[in-house]
Length: 140
Length: 140
Image 1 (tube, one colour):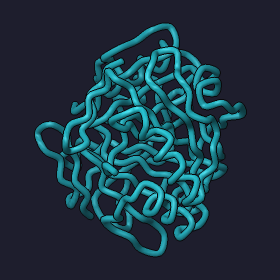
Image 2 (tube, one colour):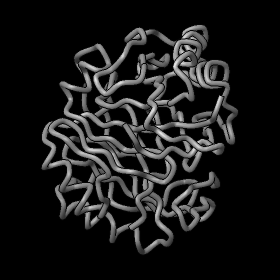
Image 3 (tube, rainbow over the protein chains, first blue to last red):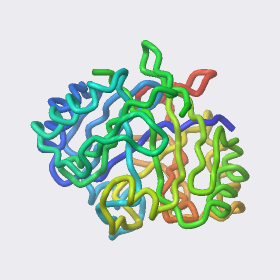
């Protein structure tokens, strides 16, 4: 079986508020949107932001909670970019969870919550390789 | 800024129980593991399974809840593989949330929760392109 994830879908409350965070904060362009979902093409897979009641209906269960027990990370290419990106995300409706500092494995990172309380780690990790297309290879 | 996500990290309770689901159910091999985290190299990014208290400490907040308001998807290359994969995941400790059926946008999909109640959609979607490396391009 392919060692592959095709979609990461976040349950959200308001499309416009969420789009502002992703489009203005990260600077990402949607590849598709309708009245209940927005998709962003990532490097090798797709990020979706889906109205929570519609996600619950699709998943066939209710009671999806925030903050959920997960995080997403966006790695940057140098240490100074960590706080630059975090500031952009805050300006676009994000909330600082953890100001940037040095984790025990080295590098530099902080956490910002999106407007629906989903956690984003913004990280610079020297061992993580990122190619020109944005494809990421594990390393510490 | 790159339209890129580098890590998706799931908060989990027991490393061994979670590893069984991912290693036996999906058939994925870890690229790194220690006493609190396991990483799996995906196509273009990295999946992490991290003990929830350690994730909370890293994120600088407590109270991470399950089931969270998100889902992950694994797309397969043909319709028949959807139920085959779902059965493997159940045999490795997963729980069916939604038996496979046809969503309104077409294709075929079902949902399985991992042992920590994180939702996986197993989907066949004709418009989604997946290359030999497992890199996924959006389509409906």
